[in-house]
Length: 452
Image 1 (cartoon, one colour):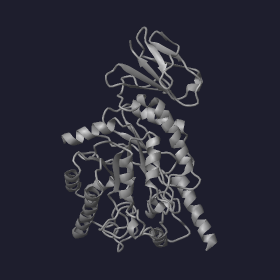
Image 2 (cartoon, one colour):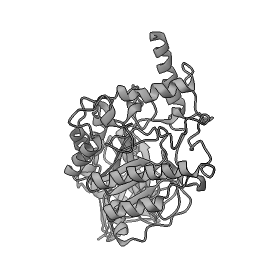
Image 3 (cartoon, one colour):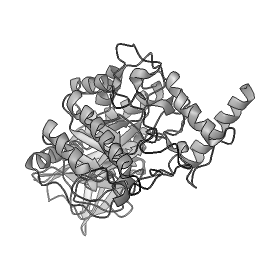
Image 4 (cartoon, one colour):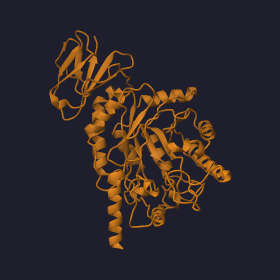
């Protein structure tokens, strides 16, 4: 049994490294945008925040594997060859009896996020595997029926949202439209499933109608029972194909009656309920004037895995600057541990990001885009104050000693200052090319140009 377990963990680790980010939502090609004035107002508030954190936490955190995807049998999935497919599913569903985060500390999550400079959060109320981190009455596949049942914090979603509200962050609720644990979606009588439901909804309309009602009821629980929510972040972008219509119009109408002004993010599904777009693990290659965020992980995985490979704080800061200059926001993926905390290495890197934003956040928060948003080698990212009086230039790699760009030249007599220190820097302007002498720095430098 020990050898079998070791082989299983090895197989899962290899699969994680090879396929951890193979399933990505691309940016949808068109954008319609909301018409509700309250939604438009909330969306503009969100666009000023620029930086959020998304937390993936669930059964997959117990063994430290990539979310839910190995439950499918799609071609891009490397199967666990130590078990049959049915054995694997039963093993995975059985993790509910091991999910016991006795150190669960949502106040720590919220505190670390605020100190990192995040202004909004998104939390996985339910991933594709169907395991609910809230007390759903529509299923017993919930945290309140796990090994954590009976703990005062067993309704984890409530505690998470309350903790982040207390720290002043905007609240986002992730919810998977597909539910692979539900027999109304993956019918056990039918063959091995892909990500889609595994029966013909036209042949079995009553079954699909029951699934539509199931999704509606869980959405209603979230929107009515967990206090003010700002963003309903809907994952599973294939669920708006005609054969997988979940009657989202009915869900959104109910949700916005309960949560006026609610931003709905129907990921990768162009239409009236994709209030902002969500390219995954990538940043668009050009500036976009409509609302969007790039969701990018701090490691290579969304959830917690043992021995992860981290991106550096400087890399995340550079990505945040790029997203901001291109008109978007950065949603950074962090995975809490199986015991329910943000571990030390995540905390350290988030603290480094927060220290930079404490000194340079003026160049990020509440800024707007500029016509010239980067230099030739994309080592400088430009933002501006909304009144147009101040230009910011964020230098990703200040170790080069000097930095140059064309256009965005300061007017004669203007100062270019190191935003963090306020110190004026030497610069020249020749034939519309600005060259600035940079101070020594181990982190990106934000320059502030106030035109006199």
